[in-house]
Length: 468
Image (tube, rainbow, N blue to C red; front, side):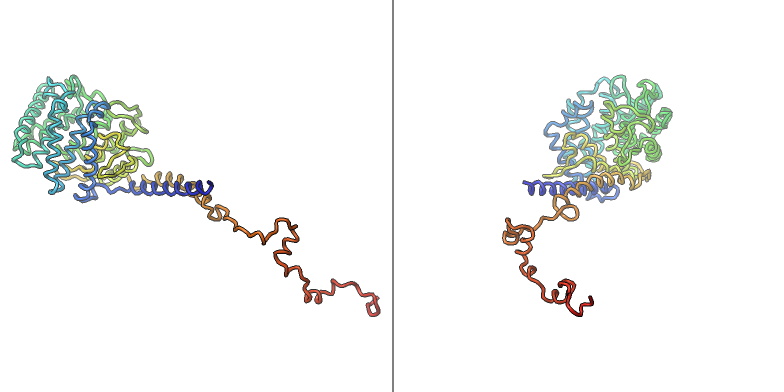
């Protein structure tokens, strides 16, 4: 039994060591900016396979129970990621189009618009129309001028553009409502990016509208951070809350498509104020540094003030802004903290308990700019963010290995097992002095040489000539 316990202890320590090696390797996950198109596609396919499996199993309905757009994002992000894969791989173009159209059919369904209000301007609100038009525009961009979605894209983009123009002319605000009486600038950022994309694809010049939208948005920034606010008054567009990471990462992703220079400027300002200060966790804070509030329905649970959803989307921001250091850190953190498991052609995080989270991460890892020029930013952090992980893993493994060495009886940590002696070598009933005699009979015989050479041991001489 003791041997079994010792063997199990050694096995457990070896298993922990293997897991630690895997975690260290994940900390050094290659940034998407350092991968080839083929490598990005190979990484995306098992992620998409899991998402399709989850969607077929009803995951969108489960995600809807967690936050208001869980169902919508589950399908939309799946389709958008496939479009990025199809653009990177000509061999997968047709499959990508089929999967994206399948996702778009769910977005266009009654279930897709069920939580939105048809009476809004545009119908169902800017959140629904913005994301749906962006996805449809991606399908048309990948399929080409003959895409059957082209006519619907033109009509939806016209409706969005008209709603923006009416709002700008009537109130001066660039922000449309997503739900009755509620407006988030991030939703309008998606909408204006979709309008610009559709104009590029259909040949409609909307440069004036985009320019007016940007100018109006600049007059309604959060005074504390200089970024677009989280929420605004739906009538005036004036901020009703400060900038927050959950919405800002979406603003940045789509502002890159509208005005790359303005987006790069805001990305640098965002990183300066929202990047984590937690050692070993280079994620994104939900609130600016110095502001510590609890999470809510928009952010989800916060850990040390960090938002996992914002961190996942910020990875895509880092990619489209060419921020190699931030992209490498966020990718490494996601892989190490997400406990990814891959088998049977699928890859999932946290046991697959939150498929929409996997969808956001896959969308970020496959990210690429759809419009606009090239920009390059560098905001950090340096490689030293990994040092707390090294220290923690070392602190865990050092005592574990000491225990394994003791269990394995490896000197000097454990006492080596004494060799078994035969019964003839030590009689059980022999006294201690007889044991030595029995073991070495030659030792019991007198040594005549020693006796002759040791006169001091002889009796004293008392006869004549003795000197007395």
